[in-house]
Image (cartoon, rainbow, N blue to C red; front, side, top):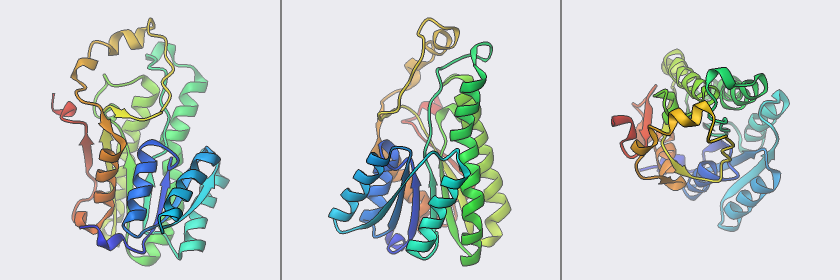
Length: 253
């Protein structure tokens, strides 16, 4: 189904662990050349070594994507080493402390929005000229169930993922006549190592706790990666502007 990805140049952010690692490995298994971007240099290196030891092609780029220079380096690495950029997976993200509006600090707001929304925007902006030059490209964002409902996370995270869905849809409409597709997955609960730092007694966690019984089965990172790779591939050639819940039906409850 995804043979079209063979030889493609792919960027996966947050590729050092969790969903990003699983996606990077799947792309590589299908013959894609992968830039594994992560804030954790050792994690990015480990994933690239996994790929190259299995006969694939990958290169690591380490850095904080809230820094414009790192964004530029990620895209430039794909273009310079792999001859262009075919697929951009904006997966890197952080959680919030499940804080309600009255409790969110400026620092938390700015950091969460910076990583989860501003960085994907800047990556998209940097990637688009290269995709436009080719006349095709696929962008996949990792949104969240929190972008579909107000009861899945704190204010900063919910706002960032809701904004990411808006980014997805705008890019899809603006560039569909240029051969570029933009879609997003909306994971529910996923078994990853992402840190969740919260005070269970605070207002936000107390409220959200009432709704968590609807979350259902927690997925594996590979299940999310399956959806990412599908949306990136030509098997999804007429799918554009879609936000795909990968949540075992949580969004249907």
